[in-house]
Length: 321
Ligand code: GLV
Ligand code: GLV
Image (cartoon, rainbow, N blue to C red; front, side, top):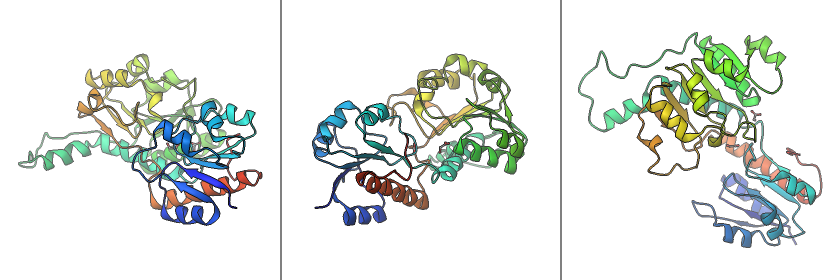
């Protein structure tokens, strides 16, 4: 019989076709994730599970699945929702989907930057709300991008690709902070590695591209926003937990920084009474960095390869361990 697999959300059709071919698969069809109880019930007896960021994969999850579980295949590059150590201890492989979403996510960061700088969403709402009467010499005035200084926190694949767009397309000066130096990027992009504090002070735009871990969680707090320029634009396409959301709201409200563009919030979705939704200088996308057709197809291929290989006890195509 075919190995048993649970998939926590519907994915692209090509992926579903393949899953149905290769496994005894159950796919959660709802638009929202299964409740915890239902999830723990559904994964019982599975050899592999295909998970999203919305699932907390911890000891309890692994125990609920049972001893036959061989692989947890995450449909994302980030896996801060997974207790990798707990999986490792039991010999369960953990996979993710790096590389294929790099361009799409860097593009999203840039889209947010331009949209925030040119107040695009505000303008769109202005028209839709019937407020636009005439061309306005003083209306909706924003920021230039050309030649500005951009500060990139975390110069991994996505950070470097975003930097490439900033440097090559808009002639920006690139600053970055990261655990290790990136000599190649320094060469190609004239990028300069600086301490986090210096990056905050010197940058016109600050974009987050690190993963979320104990070190980076909450690193954009009141003190960090205070160091930034008063007209700085803050972009986060990484994880909402990297900024302290109430501190960001304060910084935007008091004019400590100029604007923000977020593809991630804390929590997701933001609660409807979160003040962040009241601010005209903060635009928010529903965590869609990887949401292009080719990217989501490529993610499905990797995630299903990871499932199949993990169930066969072979090394994954992309393993996080
Ligand atoms: C999305 O946030 C991902 O990590 O792929
Ligand atoms: C993710 O792909 C990264 O390393 O930036």
